[in-house]
Image 1: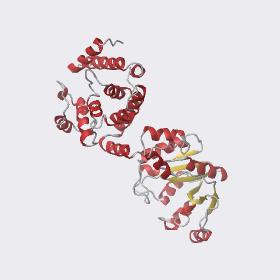
Image 2: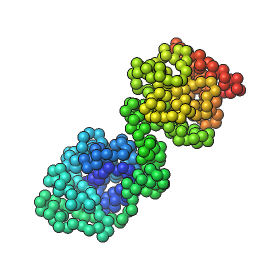
Image 3: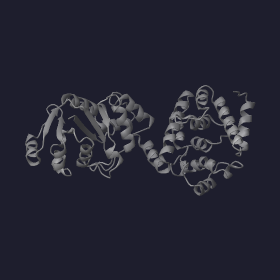
Image 4: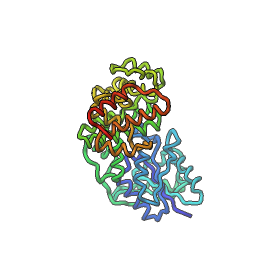
Length: 387
């Protein structure tokens, strides 16, 4: 019979304090494995500032270095609310021959009797309450729990780690560093996804309503690549990230809505553009960015508008968004590696390569090539840009 520990929580975000407790309890009780379970929709917390998917991704990154730590997605994937007895019942079915240990903070000692179906909790698992040194333990309540529910309860004292998820979120919000408070890979994830920054969190939430999951992943990839290029070419990285984040905001809209949005745009429409629905999301996206996401910056709106076709004499930001859309980390077409390399050496050469590649692809497949594509190519060649 193996010993399986279970540590649940919101993990918003997972931090080094969580991992310290997990490691100490695993070591002290000789657990064979520790199951980390992020809450989906915890009944006691009606609002969680980031998505369950992001909290899950951070937890998986944090657990990756431990072979005996496993992340279970049961609560994230399925239920409207996350009740402990349900989760323990699921785990007992998953590990029928193993002994389960439910791990919780000592602050839950006075509350657990009021949880949903506490008898089932104590029937399915032994309970380990962890507490800081000198934490006042309500031993009377523990004895009552043992008597009322035939509970097996232990109290484990761990060294105090002065880290809280609330403090981490506040530090991020006001621009303070969190290095040393969370694992490095989690810190990097938070930075890349702009988590816990109110303005970006609102953008992310709205984007998920506009885009399918695959398109949202692409969008994050474009924003990250745009930021890298912006840093490399020494322009405003926040502006580049935001333009990349919103570049495809209209991509999943139906064709009739795209056409209606296009009519409201102040940007010029190319000859033949209205005949190709695949191109309309760029100009429609600039309208959505302005009207829904309340973007007033004309450079950002222009970068969104021209990210599919481009234009003659593109600005540096426009080139960056155009190319980031093509070379973000999820792209796999034949010339992508060459284009990625060129983008960090000479943007105009990368742009010429992409324009030529697009023209050749369309001609090969018998599709219409917009005149603007030829104009962009000619303009670059006249400036002395060559491959």
